[in-house]
Structures are given as C-alpha cells and as structure tokens.
Amino acid sequence: MSAAALAGRPIDAARRALAERFESAGIDSPELDARLLVGHVLGLDLTGMIASSDRPLTADESMRLDVLAGRRLAGEPVARILGHKEFWGLPLALSPETLVPRPDTETVVELALEMLRESPANKSPSIADLGTGTGAILLALLSELPDATGIGTDISVEALGTATANAVHLGLALRANFIHCDFASALTGPFDLVVSNPPYIRTGDIANLAVEVRAHDPLKALDGGADGLDAYRILIPQAARILRPCGALVVEAGKEQAVQIEGLMTAAGLMPHASPKADLGGIPRAVGARKMP
Image (cartoon, rainbow, N blue to C red; front, side, top):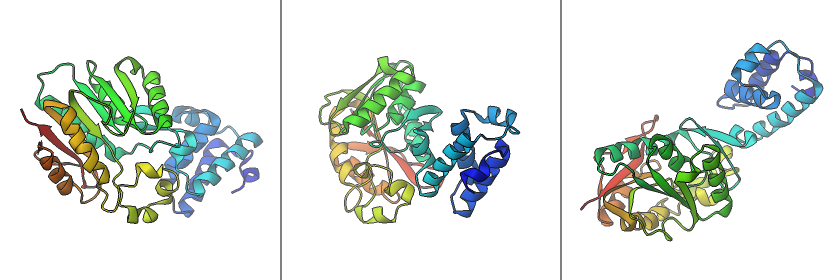
C-alpha cells in the first residue's frame, strides 16, 4: 500500500494495513513491527495510539511511514530503523558499530547474577564487560546491583561512545567506565565478575544468516573464525588473569559451543559452572566458570 493510499486513513486502519503488508512479505512479527513504526512516526506510545486510533494520517505522516516500511521490507531491523532497542527493560541507543541486543543475551545477565549471589562475600562487586557494544550486559547488571561498579571494553571507539551515552541516559555513568582495547588486554583487575558476548558465528555460516543480521550487524561482532571460537581463545585466559579468587566468568555461546567453551575454561584454570543456562529455545546460551582460590 502506497503513501498516497494511507493518507487520510485512520491510524488504526493504517497500522493494520501495514501489518498485513509485512505479513505478506514473510516478516516474523508483522503486528509488532507495524505498531512500532506507526508509533515512531506519530510520536505516540501504545496508549496514545489507542486513544488516537480514529485520527486520520496526514500526507506527511503517511509518506514518512511509507519510507520506513520500505526499509523494513528491504530487511532492515526495526531496532535499526528506530535507532534503539530495549534490553533487560532498559532502552539502549544503537550505532552501526554495535550489535542489536537480543533477548538470548539476557541469559548471560541471569547467570551472572546467580553466580554473584552464590558468592556474596563482596557487597560491592566489580564487573568487566569485554566487547561491550551498546553496554547492554554491563548496564543491565549495574541496574540490578546498586553498589556495583564496572568497566566495558571494545575495539570500536564508536561503540564505546554509544555505550557511554547509554550509561549517561540511564543514570549509571558514575558507576560505569569504558576503555578502548581488545577484550581485557588493557585491564589489570581484579574483578569479581567478567562477562562477554563475543563474536561466535562460524565464518562459513555468516552468508546464511538472516538479512537483518548479516547486512546490518557489524561483521567484526559476528565473525568468530572457522569454528566460531577464536574470541574465546583470547578472552578466557585474559579473564582468568584479571579475576579475583572465587570470581566468575560468564560468556554467551552459540549453538553446540558450550562444551568446547567449558573445555577452554578448564584449560585456563577455571572451574565450569554446574551447567550452562539455556535460552527460551533450549540452546545452552550462557556458560559460566569460577576462578578457584
């Protein structure tokens, strides 16, 4: 449906028409995507859209909506179009140098909190987030741990700028610092907790990813080398070095990688956690280990 066809139609009718257009194109979440784009163009949240459902779209609104719909139909994720994504209930700004935070990564936050609570001696834990991107994992943890402090690292200066802005926006800037380096190469520690969502897609699998990922997420945040484990071989020994005794390491894992990652943790002198934490799809997604005294 063209912009001209949407002009003058009630907001709710335009939203439904857009959802049908997305559904016909095979988009996974047509209703949600249509609602988010309509709300973005109109500057309305869900409540506002319901209250204004009978108001007709102006010609300018319909034209702007049509442009955004075209981007979505071309495979651009809604989060990229909007410029932000919610993670752990926190609104996070994005940039071209950051991954779009995904619900699966919340399992890393969950396991990290569990492992901290298993060893509650330090009431003011220090956290390192290696390859922080938007700052999603670190900022989620700081939001749950009011006495914690943390450092996020990244090799992308632009990503660090995005993470810093997110920390400021969320009121967490006084407890979060960001450093330009490769994983933990510039850190000395000691830290109570190290977390990371490193690149873990096998190089040969990248071409088969959904267009939303392969064409819009930064390649260096996806490509984990031939077996997907290159980043773990670097960051796990680094994490073992900067963890204090009894400190915990939690990393995100790809499908069928958990056992191999646990092997790398053991080789670095860490003791793997009892079991990885599975995501909603049943994939072991968060892998943990502890540095023994």
